[in-house]
Length: 337
Image (cartoon, rainbow, N blue to C red; front, top):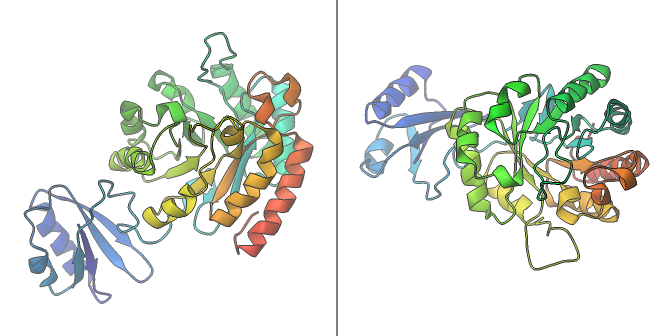
């Protein structure tokens, strides 16, 4: 249930109303926009009479929310959320590009890539230290050493870092990581999501391989309900019957999410397609669809990459991508720094 307050509502009367609602066993989420103040009522609101609430002097209207996700719902928070990712804004009119290799392989590889993507315009550096792989025989990352190398690249370039958490037992290693990524396979690892809700660090939540948008938003709700509102959604393709691409990039999810949630939405065309030559056209399409940014896999030597080389573009190709993305962002009145 959402309570919309009148513009002239004083803080004193608002706080009195909040206390009264809380006395009924409900939690209250306060959302103050430029023109509207909302109270989101969380809990069993079935016994509450909307007419009685609307009779309160400072209440303008009362609406029931049918969707099971509340804190992620745009009705609860009408203005776009802007997540501060290590000093870089994501959402709210900014178009942010995250780039780097699928996995951290060596000091030379990650430092060179970081310098190149930064020069081209990427605002954050991605790189896998812990890699969940379908095959137990595939390269599974440098683990703690990989995080140290990412931090070294951050120190050298100033780029905030994004890397994937595959197990809660590794969480202590992520203290200096700027954005914790939850991969597609862990999208419904509810224990992990709840634990990440206890920290204030931004969480980049990728869509599950076969998850609906509602299931995805419910996973985001776990993090928000735990107390962490800094959630970034990332569409990375879903599993369909199509075999020409690694997954099927669901670009329709972007405008749907923009309608349903205030959280920022990124697109990862690398994992979605599995083919480097498809990255640029789908990156441009993501801008047109209304995405808040991109996550791109960039490797200095894709042919010899230890992980997902086929879907990684070279730094030179990333330069071209950024030039074209900037032009598209200008058309959409988005800030692409």
